[in-house]
Image (cartoon, rainbow, N blue to C red):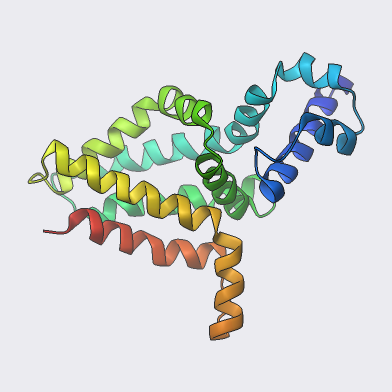
Length: 208
């Protein structure tokens, strides 16, 4: 690996940790450069601006997660019919496999995605919906195939509620783990949260 690539990866690693801990809005480029031991020119050279850096941090996960989701949905759609929970189950393996990509990758990804919405990072939502439009459209079509009685309006609301639930859960994942351990003496984890979240979401979208 060249020194240039090492510098880029170091900036990404430091930015990811700071974004996860403090959020996107409350993490300045000055803080990132100071922690990474680089100057602002290095950040500008590799990323141009903070928005591009935010997208690059998330895309390290998205470029592994989204193709895996798409492959799972393509396999699912080889069947003539399936249940809503099977659509949402297509998310499980791609999510949990992120632990193989980076240490605590699943938990970190969930937290970063949650912060992306709660911090009102509109450019990040635009980036995801445009870059991964094919996967997102396939997911929507799969939902409709599992529940063909849904109107476009009802689909809009149910996916909106689904997104809201996911964002809150992702942004609060660490707090939820701590509450479960303190209040219920339950050893929680990001995987345990996903195990509870998937059937809940599927039941909500499939509700009659």
